[in-house]
Image 1 (spheres, rainbow, N blue to C red):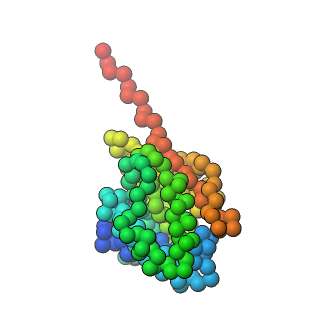
Image 2 (spheres, helix red, strand yellow):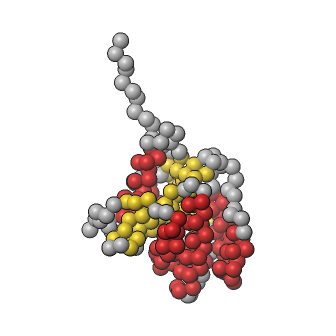
Image 3 (spheres, helix red, strand yellow):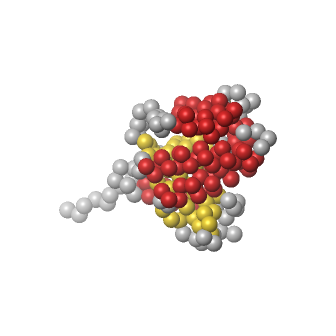
Length: 214
């Protein structure tokens, strides 16, 4: 059943709740997450939650945009968007040290995945979908968040290219329906064949203005 709850802009105070939603969904559902921290769901979710709290907080600090849909007062879906001016991806100050403290023995795998994401990041100015997660499947929450953001970017005076890294072929199909195109899969080193799928969406052409009456 489709939810009628509104899409809302979230604030810095929501960072931990946003990270918890994404971590709970990713830890339970994504093969990549299972590779990052195998065999222990609780530990996997904890590592992801603490890492994602760092990353979501940085999005707020760097003028990104975080959206959510609440049901019965709790976040049921979230989208985290970062804004990049171009050039090589820049790491957060102290990120490596903090990530090592969070992930312990699993640190090399987290770093390997970070390196893949850094390598697929566009060098031109763009907006990037860092996270999209919904606790309920089939309610259209993720699609609503995605459409809301893309509609907003398409109304900006300078409309950005939008990028993301899909985690599996189901996600590729979902994002393709929303106007994204895939560049081809990228292998995650040491993961026994796991891949990410970099995708881009270029802004649609503006409609031609009608001729001015003479």
